[in-house]
Image 1 (cartoon, helix red, strand yellow):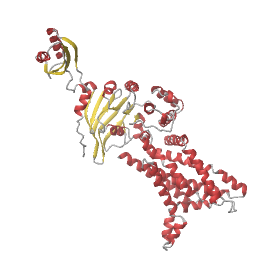
Image 2 (tube, rainbow over the protein chains, first blue to last red):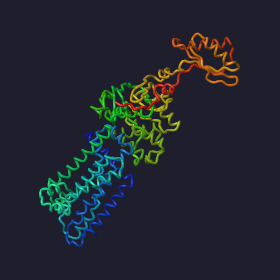
Image 3 (spheres, rainbow over the protein chains, first blue to last red):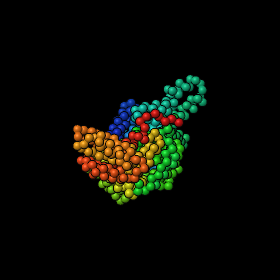
Length: 247
Length: 320
């Protein structure tokens, strides 16, 4: 009970922090502009002639690659730079409550940004008869993917007090998670003629696991994959922070 | 309230804090003195549970900071060095956050925030964001955060750093007043502050406690403590010096300053002499000789001198 209250307090403060600065507004506007551009221009939403949001969701792994680390990079590096980490961690809360609270706040923020893409759903429903179950499924997948990227950014931001360094490292890690399942890369590996290797590498990719959601399949393996990335990254964040404190 | 036993901390091969032990009771204000890098902040960070000790124990209100961190932290209010706070929040928002995380809600929260705002004179900046504040206000905002839950234990790392003289005075008064009911530790570089606000002082140098006592006791470790200073005019300095050194309780006489027809001297007591005897000696001599005395007082000792003498100027790093 107490833990929930603490997490809520921390998350509330963190979320307030986003909206107190222009970060939140800039992010939401850019995110929506880019989503619109990729869906309608680059994705060929109209040219496809089908009532689905494939052209919308295909771009999410790539959009998140840059936008999510931008949201997560300040989580802990800012605390370290300002020295507020000392304040936060001497409050009567545990380190994991602080980590979870901060993570949830930025995840909520990303969820809000994603919710604001609802006009695409309205558009596609107006123009045709899409399978809204599939769309819902893909949204869930997209959220989980954003959460995974965010947890990774959270981890890298605990590593350094420099936000730029934190941003770059998390982009690289997320890029790796995309590329190991990206068709051009997997095709390259296929030439080695070792199907097991390709499968193993691709199993680590967010692309592979996001695909299921896009088709409207809620596979427990995919859900577990994203949740375990989140769990592992947040756990590592805790280890890194403990390391800093131990000196 | 605060009990520190054999506390040590090493960063790699460097021993920052070396087997420190002390206790602070309720109603005590402990001044923490020491040169830069002596281990003051490290010790305070260990007491507040921010960094784990390499060795030794800290307990606050009976709770071990490592084994029962949450219970111990609940009792502590902490003002870290440089008074950090969330730059993008308003003072009001920040204090509400601090109150909430301390488990206060509803009316109790409102009362706590109002009390802290009043005590730290923050009414004027309540709705300004922290980053737009001057250093003094930022400092007081963080100070307000530390007292928001009316803690039994207050740990203040350089609470008067960066404040103007009036604010310094206010903070000192506040510390002294709160010290009547709480256990307070505060660190400082400013020695008058120790005399103004502390009931006890600890001097720490290179990770070790080198002195522990009331400010008065510490001052008595000064060389000049107990000496009688006087200024006499219209008489040969050598004569005065000669007469003074013949006094029963005087061990040594030095000339501090000498000008055209005035001379300042300091008479040091013999080690076995009782308080006040030397002063009486000197006064009797003055009356007998009918000197024109412009100033006469007994030295209490000077803290800065004691401080300099026991925190050696050599800065060799202590290694394990």
